[in-house]
Amino acid sequence: MQNEVIENGKFESYKKMFEAYAISPLDGRYFKNISFISEYFSEFALIKKRIFVEIQWLHFLCGEDSPIGFVLNKNIHKALDKFHDDFSLNDFFKFKELETSLNHDVKPVEYLLRDILKNENSEFIHFGITSEDVTNLSYALLFNGFKENYLMPHLENIISSLKQLALASKTLAIPGRTHGQPATPTTLGKEFAYFVQRLQNSYLVLKNIKIEAKFSGAVGNYAALKVAYPDLNWIDIAKNFITKFGFEINICTKQIEPHDWIARHCNEIQLISTILIDLCKDIWLYGSYGYIGQKAVEGEIGSSTMPHKVNPIDFENCWGNMELTICLSQLFSRKLPSTFLQRDLSDSTVLRNFGVLLGHFELGLYSLKKGFDRIQFNEKNAEQDLAKNTVVLAEAIQTILRKCGVKNAYEIMKQFTRGKDVTYEQILDFIQKLDIPQDEKEKLLKLKPGDYIGESIQIVEQICK
Picture 1: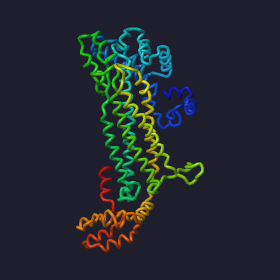
Picture 2: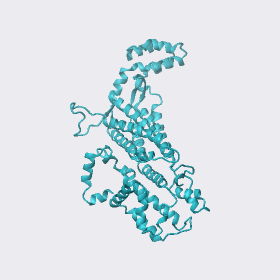
Picture 3: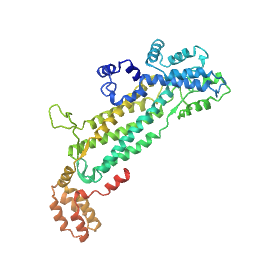
Picture 4: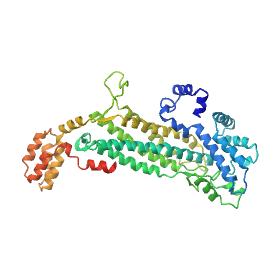
């Protein structure tokens, strides 16, 4: 579609117009970052895919292995395929004119294909099916293509980049923080690995969600097909048609396929968005503590009034877009699986916003990856912060005291440290006076906050191997 506009010398002017007048920032300000979504979730893409489904049904019904015993001339099949392959903006506008006059968004497909057949056996176009058969399979095909070509690879890229950050900072010790206060030290890499593991789990769940489709007519019982050819098993025939696209058939439906598979995808996308918000918040805070910095880009401005600023806007943009994704995902998973009796049309206008939901998700991923690429670590600040909070060794000391059989070890350390500004020298002096075996005492005297990280490095290596 874009090539055709480019050939007419209008593409650049169209882009500028969209940037200026687009209602959604996805179609204006951010379109250059997520333009690939229009390949699957634009009006053009939906119409072309509906044409594809109608043609495929005719091929299946009236091809060489026709289940009804009626085979159309091969030239007819070739002409239909050529129309789909060459579907242009002019064809699109012709479709839209028909849609306006008919007040229906699927019937024009049938009329356009009839023109190609010149009414020769054209009654077998859209035979025995309803518009929802065409539409639900179209969305299944569009989403599946997007999932395979963009959604899953982009998530893989995010996970891979996060793994690299985790491995690069697996030894970078920082104070842990519980309830916002200094706690047992950890490593920045281990904290990144925590998100790697969560994202990997959700990635696998998302990858394995099956896509379903129906092709069973006006109320889901194959009535029109059965009355025309009563001796045929239309459940099996429809199954053969749908499974050739790699989908599972939903045998028992109303007029609409209930969209449960979409809800399942949305639920997992919502969880991934929540995980990424959690990650962005942590990175934002680690930046405010000075453990993480961002590479300054020549020519960029961080603040209109404070020249020194390098703000974490990529992580903030990701955060905002994931919040929008969650809102839309919740709407989709709540609304789409519900319909009045055998059919109402309220799902249609919601489904048309599928690209909006995925657009915000993809824009969030784009911003996150951009932020990842600018991260730099500041070990000096982390070391200084640990040195100011040596009191976090209280847990280690009381654990050794317990090991050595000292009674009330927790209470002893509580009295020594809780709510007090205890220095490292005071801790060393306290250790020297302990009545414990010398080897355990030596162990504690050598222990520094940056060493008290447990299995953090091993955790990173196992998660990110």
